Each structure stands twice: as C-alpha cells, then as structure tokens.
Image (cartoon, rainbow, N blue to C red; front, side, top):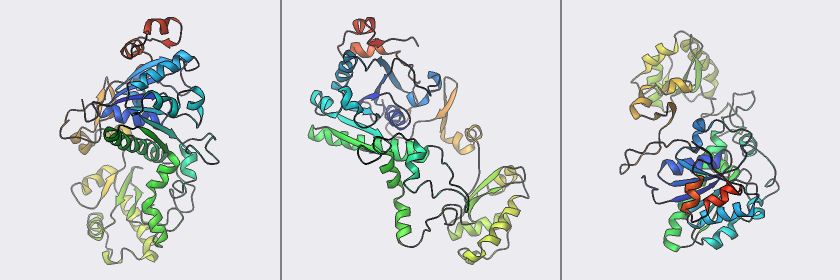
Length: 378
C-alpha cells in the first residue's frame, strides 16, 4: 500500500504542479480521486500518456451545477486532503473554498497551489513557470556569461518550488491533524517555494561569495571545472570537479599539465577553460565516458531522455520503468518497509465516476443521468 496507504486525497483537476504533487502522493500509496471537468483542457494529451495522473482514480463532475459542487463536498467529507490549483477566490465563489469544506470536515487539510500566492498585487494575474521564476532571481542566475537567461524546463518552478513544497506542507499538516484533530489551509506558491530553493545563494550573495550575474560564479558555469564541454562528435560532457581532490583526478584523466593548487585563481580561468575545451574536443563522448568511468573526477556524459533510461546506474537502480509500454520514472524516494512500490496506470477521465460517487454514498445513477456527472469507459 505504501507509507501513505491510509491517506485519501481529493484533487480538483488543474495543470502542472498540483497534479504532480498528487501524483507523488499516489506513488506513495495515497488514494487520490481526481475531479475532472466535462470538457478536456487545451493542453490535454491522450490519457495513457498523462503520467501526472498515474495511480489516481477519476470522476467527472460539472462544477457549474450545484449538484456537482455538492458531490465535491461529499467527497471531501471522507478525505484527509483536498488540493485545488485555481486562481485566488475561485474556489470560494464556487462554494468549495476552505470555509465550506472545513465546515463539512474540520480535520481535513486544504491544499492551495498557485503561482503568485493567495495575496499580493499579482495574485490574480495569469502566469506560468517562467513568469514566477523570473521575479525570484532564479531565472536571472542561469545561463552563460553575457548571454540570455536559460529556461530550466519547468523543474525549478512548477515541480521544485511548487509541487514539492505543496507536498511537504500537506504532509506536515496531516501529521499535525492526526494529533490535534484540526485541519488547516496550506498556501503553497511557486514564488515562495522558488525563493526558498534559493536560500544557499542568498547567503553566498550576502557573504560576497556570489555575484548577482550569470555565468561568472562557481556553480553556474563560470568556473572551468564546473561546466559543460563539447566532444569530438558534437555531444557533451558535464564536469563537476569542485573539490581539490576531485580536480586533481580530473586533470589526471584529462591528461592536462596544470597546477592543481591554482584551481581558484580566476585570472587563469579563461586559459584553463580553453585548454579543457580543446582536450574534450579531441575525443568522442563515448571515449571520454569510458576514460572517466570509475574515477572520482565527477565527470558524466550529458544524455538525452531516451539514452538516460539505458545508463548503467539508472538500470541498476531500476529508476526508469515501463507501465503498459510507457517509459517513466520509478517511484521515489524508496522505503525499506515498502520495497515494491510501482507506478500505477494513469487515470482515464471519468472511468471511475460511478464507483467513486457510490462509495461516497451518492446516487451515481441519477447524477450521471442528469448530466452532473459523466462516466467514460477505459
């Protein structure tokens, strides 16, 4: 069942961070019921490939009808967690905001996922991952010196600063509710979480150890021993030889006659970078990967998504698995008491409508017949 096998979650369908957070809860054993809309969203993909819905069940309800909203409240009455990702105020206007839900279930944890947060001058403004990380300083810090900021997919904002922090908040609040009997609202925003992720760099900036620019610092590609280099076949190797002992090993394998004791002399960095680049350009990625294999030089080949699934460490850890022929990440993290956790199949919107409504004590037949609920076949 997983460590969250006794936790029940109601997820109001949305995009990005909230579905990912609920996927993580489902991966760890929680029962997640996703409330989908009658009409598909603009960016919907075929259900079998919508991996953020894996391990969940789905019910389709029309939230424009009072009967649909009443059904959501009934589902929440038997849940531990409810998650919504609407703009601030939308859930309240619908009648399924925190006050309404907690009145029905005082011990429930009400999770709210937004980009900007529930208040502030931008709270009601539309945005996406790139919008939120832009104003936190995170986007500004990524990229080559003198170049434009580089977009880190939506890993830093949506999934790192958003979903991960929502899950931490939900689990902390559920833990407290188990002792106090009182639920609460968890206000998670991508803005807040991304800023929190930047804590290390705030400290380094204050200490004068980090320049407020990109491509000039130790961890942003500014240092020649923490950078990416092109190989003879147009591929790349990632170098992370930060500590002196790893740097010495790096120079040895690369066969560079450089004084390891002068690693931190920044005036030598341009020349050192050019020498390292020339060295990597002399062999293919496969040749360099073989030379660095088994060393502590902290050098790895840069792999594509398909290649990564076949990397020896990935295969040894079974970190990529196939569910119905679709390759995807395995459940993470891992638990000694639950060694066989495996991703579930993605929910088909509406496939569980009849069963879910019946379990909540609702008249599923009537709700389906009058159009409040929709049932679809798998």
